[in-house]
Amino acid sequence: MPLHTTSYGDHGSRIVFCHGLFGQGRNWTQHAKALATDHRVLLVDMPDHGRSPWSERFDFVAAAAQVAELLSADDPVALVGHSMGGKIAMVLALQHPELVERLCVVDVAPVAYRHASEFVRYIDAMLAIDLSTLADRAQADAALVAAVPDDGVRGFLLQNLRREGEVWRWQPNLELLRAEIDQVGGWPAGALDGTPSYDGPVLWIGGSKSHYVRDDYAAAMEGYFPKVRRVTIKDAGHWVHSEQPAVFLEVLRRFVD
Image 1 (tube, helix red, strand yellow):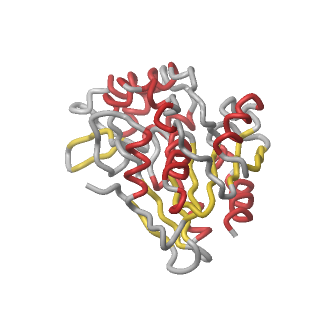
Image 2 (spheres, rainbow, N blue to C red):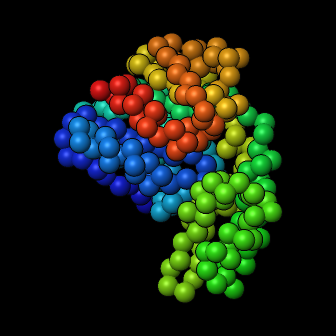
């Protein structure tokens, strides 16, 4: 099955958004609607997320290939990816440069991260909820407070809780993501050995309060993407596009225009 997508706009150049871990395409709706006045925007649910199909293992190369199936060399896109989606977008640009006219990477680097414990805690708390006896979303919210005390993060996770008839279910493939969390936080360097660098323009956006984009990651970024330009947005953490949406949109708009 193809990945689930949502489209906005009917003219102009094409922009494609890839969300991060626990996200879904609709997380970008606010930005998509703003950009749709001048662009054709496609929001994609990544594999094992949202309404896209589940897989048997997590693989950045395979995920990038699935997103690539939505694109065409006759209509190369501005590809935007955040966190996990940023890594998928980077792999896609490196392996299928003819599909990507320009690339925007949001608060992630082409490196392996070693701080997956917080995500494991989130997943364990989500899986611990007995969905068969769940009365409403408020009950789920209360059940997550101890493991996820931040209201914003908890609300973000609860967007993945979907009711179908009388049955509640989590949209992400939580069991797989927990089992392969090291792969999710990793980087497929071996699979990219011998792959030429991507020569299109690249915008690397980070949040000033985030630890995902650091000076010592610049060499890796520039090695894969020699035409990269780095922008840091003040008063923003890892979810820079939701914490500073107006500033993020202005920076992105200048890049894609």
